[in-house]
Image 1: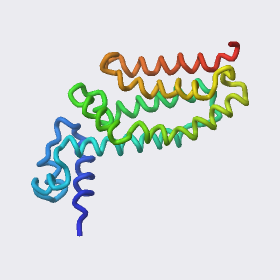
Image 2: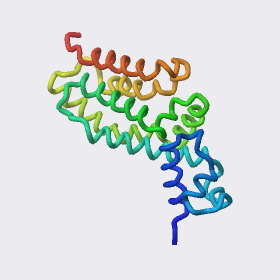
Image 3: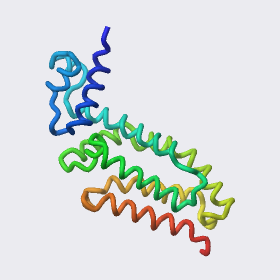
Image 4: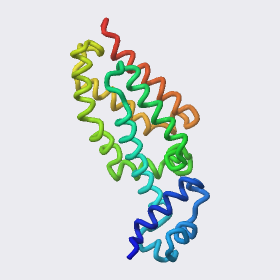
Amino acid sequence: MIDKKAAIFNSGRELFYSKGFKDTNVSDIAKMAGIGIGTFYNYYTSKEKLFLEIYLKENENLKKSIVESIDLNDDPVTLVTKLVKQNISAMNSNLILKEWYNRDLFSKLEQYFYEQGGIESIDELMHSGKAELIKKWKAERKIRDDLDDELIFALFNSILYIDIHKREIGIHHFPQILYYLTEFIMKGLTDCRK
């Protein structure tokens, strides 16, 4: 027996990835999944709800992939700016993740992302690693030791949370500003002459 919800999810993912959100419709998803349009609505109330679920999964997979690809022996500036660069690159090359910058869709994405615990899952994924890394960097004198760990966490988190304000910053400038702010924060944290 076919798992209809999985078929819808997988078909939606494939179509959103190849055609983008706007050019994908429910009838295309249902046809590819081998179900009727009514069956689609038994599992998802809208194309947006399906997309948002797919988006969260893609984003979670990206974050895991990036965390697995980093070299913890890199200096702090290189390591963190590399993380941000990889994230921006993946967001721009994956049509599903690129929708985060879609003016018509991103407020719904943000709201759903935060309602579904998206930021908490990223924090959870990265929190224990950050704590260990901060201790390691302090022991190696690669990062300022005059700042307590909670403040350093807050600075790291500000890099993540700035995403919430991409509309005010300007979508077209946002990725570049995120990269530069990350670089500035990390250079400030690693200036051990303070």
